[in-house]
Amino acid sequence: MMRAFLRRHALLPALGFALAAISLPGAADLAIADWIYGLEGGHWALHHHYVTQFLLHDVAKRVEIIAGVAILVTALASTRVPQLRVWRRSLWYLAVTLPVSVGLVGGLKSLGRGLCPWDLSRYGGDQPDTSYFAAAPGQTIGGHCFPAGHAAGGYTFLALYFVCLQVRPQWAGRGLAVGIGLGLLLGIDQQLRGAHFLSHDLWTAAICWFTSLGFYLLFFRRQSLPGVYCSPVSAQ
Image (cartoon, rainbow, N blue to C red; front, side, top):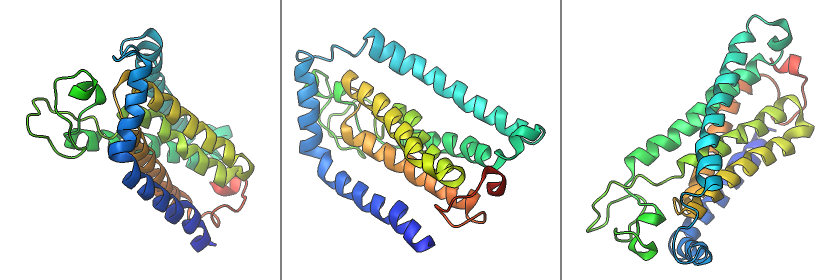
């Protein structure tokens, strides 16, 4: 059972992410960014737009922080509130997984030198084209645009899939849809603003998925066979 679980949740996603990571950077990334840039009239018209910058970037960040704090507080309360104790392990799983996923993406961003689309001369910037991992000749700013940090605030909720898989398997698809939906919303928002290429979001999704998987195995591997229904009580 464990072997089948790992094949479905680790091996197949890894192969899919690897294939996309090989094919997207370069021509595919540029083609998508060119298309968006052209739709916006040859400039990043949505860079400072009320919806894309204020609502889906600034406000969304605050909501992410509030959600994370609320989960942590609820996890702490689960040690004393009887009604929450049956969800304690799931709450602590989320309280740990969400910030670690976001932190890993942020840490990789701080190490990289890749630039945002809006920085590149191809899209009206003053910097040369560059790879994700190293500075290009003539690059005069630090970059740090890879992977996609803002999208991590959405893709980190892929962890909901694993929570549902453990305590309500019939809801697992809904948990997955929430994580993918939030990640796409925040990721596409940043692409429309010129902040990231599509592959930046792909790498962020991969980091969040495998972080969620790793902590799932750490928190729940002793509770039941993966993917086999158990009640919230037995899951704790």
